[in-house]
Image 1: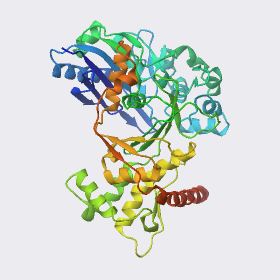
Image 2: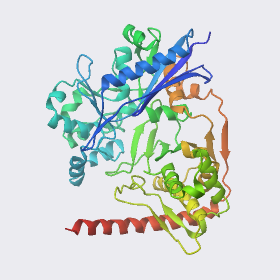
Image 3: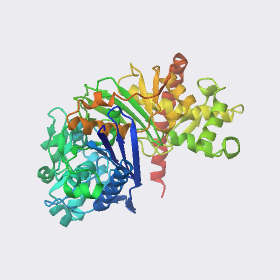
Image 4: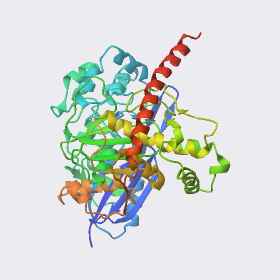
Amino acid sequence: MTALWVGLDVGTTAVKAAAYTPDGAQIAQAEAPNAVTQRAGGESEQDMAQVWQTVCAVLSDLAGKCAGAQFAALGVAAQGDGLWCVTKDGAPAGPAMLWNDTRTAEDLAALTERGATAAIGRGCHTSLWSGTSGMLWRWLRDQRPEVAARTAHAVTCADWIGLCLTGQIATDVSDASIPFLDFAARGYSEAQMAALDCADIAPRLVAPRRADETLGGLTPEAARATGLPEGVPVAVGTLDLSAMIVGMGMDQPGQTMMILGTTAVVNILTDRVTPCDAPVGASVLHPTSDVVIRVLAPTTGAAAFDWFAGLHPKSLGGASVGDVAARMNALVEAVPPGSNGVAFLPYLNGERAPFVAPDMRGAFHGLSATTTTADMGRAVMEGAALSLRHCFEAEGGLPTAPVQLTGGGARNPVWSQIIADVMGQPVLVSAASDHGLWGAAALGAAAAGHGEAVALAGRRTEAQETYTPRDHDRYDPVFARYHTIARHHRMLQAELSSLRKEQP
């Protein structure tokens, strides 16, 4: 019997695991919710022991669904950043503080104001945010000194789960990237730690490794808790986004991938990054190759579609998400590129890429007495696509090769065609939606000696829809219009925000 490869993804709100044959066929999958505690003041935490118990339950469920099977390897992916503190005995030092925690926002603003974060920008090409380890360590040291004192290792979620599975602790280069890794030196930077007054975190950081290396074998205790065989090789854990990129077969400069989920993400693989004090977006090192993954994440993706559809319950209402999308598509397909002069700025929740403006808000421009719901609907879909192009343009230009697209919005054929036309490159949409799990499984197999991770991931045959550009030339002036409106809207928003500050 062929031994199975297991991929584990420990997300913020859910834990998933899947078992695969070496050719990528999924045999079984299991899933359970992951509890998050959020409080006033921006706190976002998880009970580390509870996260491990949820992982055990999910893996045990998966093992039961694969009764009688052999297992060759286990790969781990998880939510990134945050601060997961471990004692010298391998126990939680306190609750995990997550990547979306904002309790340090005022502290970060003060550091940024005096230029302290510039060293982070130059070193790891990332615009710092509140839920990163350095910022959270500053808060912990000040507000919970007893937890900081018993912290022997400051790690990530993937590292914690790897420790629970194998008794060994490690972090991969992707998870280690932000905020203290110097990409040029491929090591932690004393200057970056000093910039945040975090020299005392240095002995608590774990030296970064590649995610295709073996962390260890499943311990007897972990085997009993998960139902998997003792000794199964476990790979060094990695960031969930990195596992997804491996699962999509990406490890070369110039390759690009977009996620059109509730929010949107543009991922650009590059071997050339120009250091600057205040980069836009984030950067992480690829888990198995020498390239850098530039990560630009506009705040609004498919959420714009949902918002607009919700305003028109009679014309767009339906029994399912698919019904709503079908009705919207039927309306917008008859509207030409440029939406008859209507433009939509998709800043419903502020913006974070390709520029940072948390107080920005969305807007329609170009409305007239003849504007229809169809015009506005297409403008909404174009606005999200144009914001993705804006990210590419800010990073040096449009993609020069086909772009992979995933996320809920990718299931909409009209929207995918619009994106292809806006980008001027074929957009490739896979029928598979488990690239993170499959990437983790491939990393586990690579660590167990079965080959190179991206090559292993490429073994899988996926049904794929290709959307070829048809109206790219017509979208060049549409983007120029969008860019001009966006630029002036930023200036207008800044003036309006200034007026609000002046009000008593």
